[in-house]
Amino acid sequence: MNLVNIFTIAIGLSMDAFSVSITEGAVAKIFKKRYILLLAFLFGAFQAFMPLIGWGIGKLTFSYFEKYNKFIALLILLFLGLKMIFDAIRKDDKDIKRTPNLKRMILLAIATSIDALAVGFTLGALEMPVITSVLIIGAVTFSFSLAGVYIGKILGLFLKDKAEIFGGIVLILVGIKIFVGF
Image (cartoon, rainbow, N blue to C red; front, side):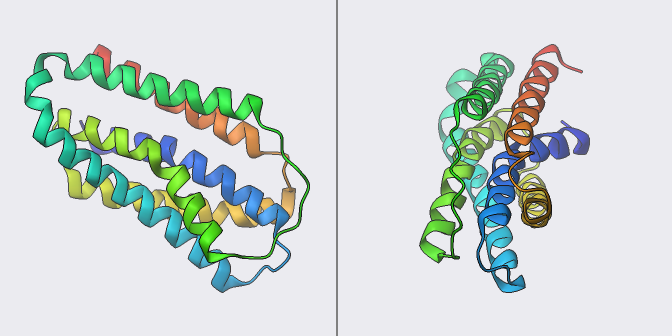
């Protein structure tokens, strides 16, 4: 795996956080830089931390499944990508203005980073450089989340579902690329 693949995975993973950030920007009553930076930091930190946990679990158990690692990576990324697409299609968004709330931001950060746990398992299986990978995933998610809040403030909820669908497609394509061996 090379840096292009890591960045591609990071972009795909960051789409959930990006989508939620757009929503947060669109529905926020209070639009302060402190709130925006905290939201982007939490999303980036959780997206970076979860693959690290997944990698640790993968290192402990993956030797049993070594000959199937590319197939397992394909299945995981295919599942996550399809889940993102179906979730985007099924969502009902309410037009509610919200005030910033740390507890809700942390829950959103956790919820948007669950798929990164599975990707961490995949990173271990494919012997990708873990520290570099999690730093890139965290930085990309931070950047996308920061941009998402501003885009949400400007464009409202228009792009939200499209971003999640794009992220799902990217994860599926990365899974196919890993499986085929490009």
